[in-house]
Length: 390
Ligand SMILES: Cc1cc2nc3c(=O)[nH]c(=O)nc-3n(C[C@H](O)[C@H](O)[C@H](O)COP(=O)(O)OP(=O)(O)OC[C@H]3O[C@@H](n4cnc5c(N)ncnc54)[C@H](O)[C@@H]3O)c2cc1C
Image 1 (cartoon, rainbow, N blue to C red):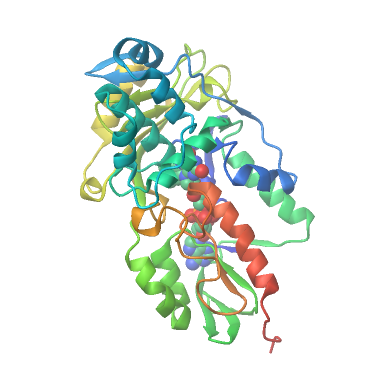
Image 2: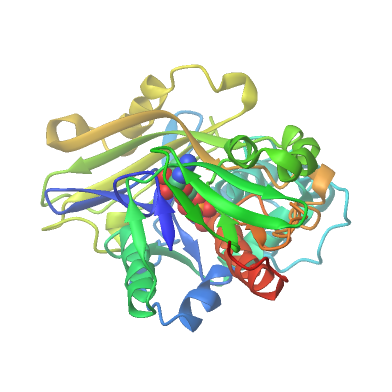
């Protein structure tokens, strides 16, 4: 049984559908080389997708928008090395190194370094490459190197496919049902209490709330006490984003990176079916560091769109600005050796209780981590000796 507080399932993987346009919550790509892809396939989830056109990809540098390939050809001395790094075809970095140190070690050329930093930031959503573990950056580049995929129908297609599989296998989904607490002690779980006061007896529970701090509040008891020190050290990854739908018959536009500021313009409609009649979906994101989370970045994102697609305002069908979305509950920090020493699915130490989310487990980043930890959590609760129901 899946208990969901919101009126629909999907969480941050949902898409907003407006007049046939499918808008994800900010820029979203799934990597074919990531952990989720084979797990989804093993569940029978087949996804349709398009892959961003690398040759047409642009970059904003010193206020000008130009082709990334031209910039690399004209301004980068260490081209071969840069391209190998971006494809993840370099040896894994030493554990303990930061992504910034790793890039500086591999590349001497300043423009090559800046391009590498931008691509690592885009693949990991990390605005702070000094805190990001080099190993996590390397893993993401290798996963992306096997294919970056924009999903047809947006990520909602992934949510719907998983919900359909759950239905086919006898699972039950209850939406609009916020959980207040998961009663437990050292020996196991007893009851899931809902906000409306309902008590559901349960001896195997996976907590997959998305937010590590909210997880502590809902768990309370010995599990929260055990997890609290690790959660206190976590640094969530955040992004401000502008999600835009433009009316039909747009010219083509590929993704635009920026060397000038931490802004990325993703255009899924260029290669995936997310807009009707050659309309355009643009998902522009501003990577946030803890010290600029509270600022208003809307003007900056709009200015980036002005440079990439002049006149876009005249064609708007729908636009939504979100000042700060949580991309992941914890950054793949050097302190946890990237994903390797993140809290484990069974870290709560209570038989029958497990955690899942993009801040859990030793595998992958972002949705890859959520899905991989979900599978690990299921195995953990099924293997645990559990209390008989009262
Ligand atoms: C702007 C942005 C861009 C991103 N880009 C990418 C990308 O390119 N690639 C990638 O792999 N990932 C990306 N992600 C991350 C990805 O969306 C998440 O990692 C993934 O969706 C997390 O799934 P989850 O199920 O672990 O958590 P969530 O999606 O947060 O789901 C948690 C669910 O728990 C529910 N809930 C909360 N409280 C309660 C309660 N008390 N009772 C019951 N239910 C509750 C919530 O309503 C929610 O539905 C991005 C995220 C954002 C925000």
